[in-house]
Image 1 (cartoon, rainbow, N blue to C red):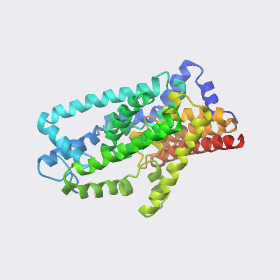
Image 2 (image 1 turned 90 degrees about the vertical axis):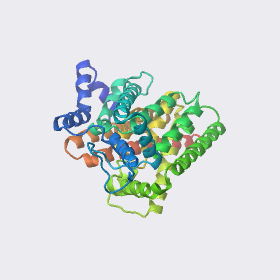
Image 3 (image 1 turned 30 degrees about the vertical axis):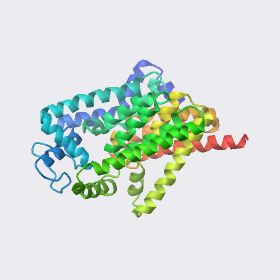
Image 4 (image 1 turned 120 degrees about the vertical axis):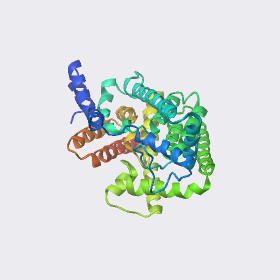
Length: 390
């Protein structure tokens, strides 16, 4: 069986073919965006949930009530911590809704440009540009049009991740701050043991510091808002994660399979999964002696896969690290390069073909499952090779 990436390079050898095939893989995003425009559907609904939460607080109402709605807005349910709603309320009082909205739109578009450049255009990012193109299939129309705060957060994390080996404290600060808004962003701390250079004790020290900072800032965020709102947030967040929208990753796999484990069992299963993915990535990075950028993007991909409630907005930076997995497998365990390449590109084809077949509810779950399996297979093979040579 031929390597999937070799076949892809053959298909895209001519410029016109490369452009056409890239357009095909961008179809989910383009069709979703055009569909929203033609149907007149709301853009920036996630932003409106934050703005509506602030507006309701200013009116003396809870942002977590069952009656959550604001006139003129098509807001999604608000599930952020109370301090986020209180911050939005303060900004609305200070500058008004129009300035707040257009200021956020400008920040959001800048963040989209930063992510697009780093992930799909930057020369040093793992994989040739045309090899990154199939990962466009993982980006749906709603991923960018809902205006979720995860986009500016991802841009900030990527920018500081590129400087991680030189400025680890800046990266830790940004991830800790991101975790105060979206707690699952703390999975990006996996970059510390993966992407930092130097001896193991140095990486362990920064990892411990990162974990303490992330959990500490999150604990402060829990207590920063109005205590009377905390129970409403807890119920809203749990309902959204476990019942309404468990996402396309670990929680999505569990509940999508029809399972309903108790929370302790769910947490234990996630801990096993996270340990397996993290150790596999570490074994792969060490065995293949990956360079700086490959380690960074491997960490970004692993952080994405470790996000329990993995949403469509979280897929933007997944691809380059998976290409680093294929390249590392070629060095650390050459016998698994071909199957790993098929798992990686299979994730893209699954997302594209299942989306076209109107099976979008399972397309991204299968894609993330294949991506996670590629890390596990490559990491296990690299660890086995290392053990066999001792």
